[in-house]
Amino acid sequence: TEDEIEDGPGAAYQVFLNMEAVLDNLKLLDYDREYCKQLHHKPISRHYFAMATNSGEQFHAFGCLASWLVRMGGKDMEEPQEYDDPNAIVSGILDAVRSLGHSIDFPPSKLKSGSGPQVVYVLLKLSEEALQVRRFVFDKPRYPTDAGEDHVDVIEDESESAVKTLDDQGGVADEFSDDDFIEDEDNVPDVDGLAKMAAAASAAAGGSQGDAVLKPEVILESNTDSTEWMLEVERVQPQLKVVLRAEGKDWRVHLDSMHQYQKAIGDCYGQVQQQLKRMEEDIGRSLEKLGSREKYLNSQVEGALRELRAAQDRLAEARERYKQASGASTTAAGSCRRSPRSWSE
Image (cartoon, rainbow, N blue to C red; front, side, top):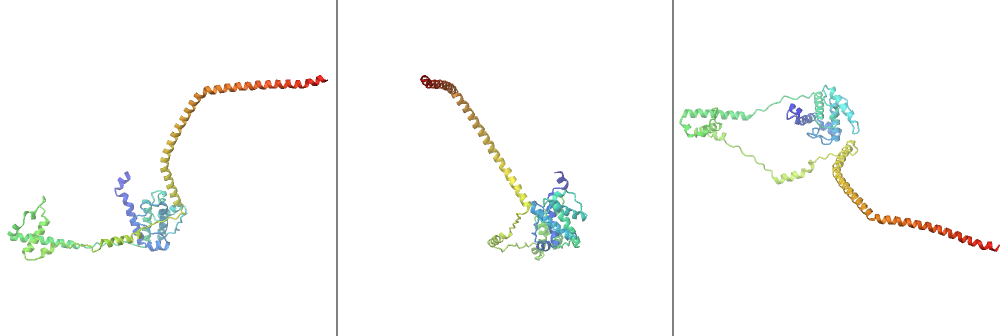
């Protein structure tokens, strides 16, 4: 991007350097004893706030550490709790940074993640202010003198004296081959050739100084057994593992769980959606087959159905005639039963 081009290729790693500077300042402030032990907080790692691992846990650690640094800098700020409003925590920290005379050119929401360049920047400024309040000043660096430079000067002096001696003797130079006097285009003498000349001159003089100068160093070897080393590594390996356990009551943990479930549902939805589409297509084809079979059956039994309806109509007519006939016979029978009585009268 354009920002990376302007800042340089190493701008992405500046946050790690700043985080190491923050950790150095914390060690100078004796945070192991005054912060970790007295306030019962876990020590942070070398690049803890430089990379995002667990946003909820990192934000809580950032709030606690920043409030402690503010108090170390002479300001009043209470340590935030787990259920406090993140906006209020960020606002209090930024107000403390502004009160120290530092400008904030990023939005406050950048601090809610608990990691990143902005978080490291705030911690760096607060730790530097705390060191100034304690009147801590770095001494000027003291560079050790390199003993090897004197040794090189001695060898060069011996080489020059050897060249002068050979020039004075005249005939001794014939004992060396042309490889001892290789010169490049700039007419610079070969250092190896000069060293050999110095050794030869010392040998010709009857001394053993050349052998002492060119004597190889003793190769250092380790006396540690590899088997014992591996056993010791296996023994201490379980103790080197650090497990950070988050509390289940923290709302940030639940939020992270919701994000994980949402991601899992999104991953499964793609596969389930394809299966549902295939089921929909299969059901559609089955319904089409059933419709075609129904039409075929209707066409086959249509004649029989017409005959059935005609037979039902004839049956209804026959029943109607039967009712009429039975009614007439009943009337005739009643009149016959009344007629003998009238006759007797």
